[in-house]
Image (spheres, rainbow, N blue to C red):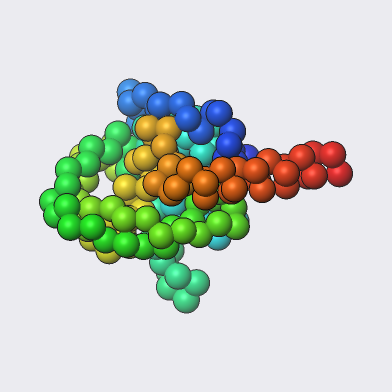
Length: 172
Ligand code: NI
C-alpha cells in the first residue's frame, strides 16, 4: 500500500467533475486500500477520489473513533436522494482544507444507493454525522468544497491563508 497526495484548496483539480466508475476491478480495489491508508494517516473520516486527483465517482468513509475498530465504508457511483430536507448543522472540516472547521447546513436525512468494494449494489439511509459525511464527499465528486457554503469573505480568507502556507512549504 502507499500514501497518496491529498490535493489542497484552492487547487483547480479539486473543481473537476468525476465520471462514473465503469468496472470494479483489482486496480480500483488497490486504489481504495491506498485511500484508506492515506485517510487514516491524516486522521480523516472521509475521502473522495477527487481529493487524490482521480476523477472517478467513488469515496470512502470511516466514522469509527480511535477506541473503536475500523469500520471502512466504500461508495462507488453513489446516487443520493434527500429523505428529510430539514437542515442539520454540523461543524465540518476537510483534508483538502487543512486546519479549518466551519458550520455547514445540509439536509438531515438521505438515501444513498451505491456499489460496494466488491461491485455489489447496496443502499443505506443515513442521518447525523454519516449523512453529513456522505453529502460532503459526494460534493467533492462534483467539484464542490464545504467552503463553497461559507460567505465569500470567509472563503477568500481561508484561500489566502492556505496559499500563503503552501508557498512557505514549497519554498522551504
Ligand atoms: Ni472534504
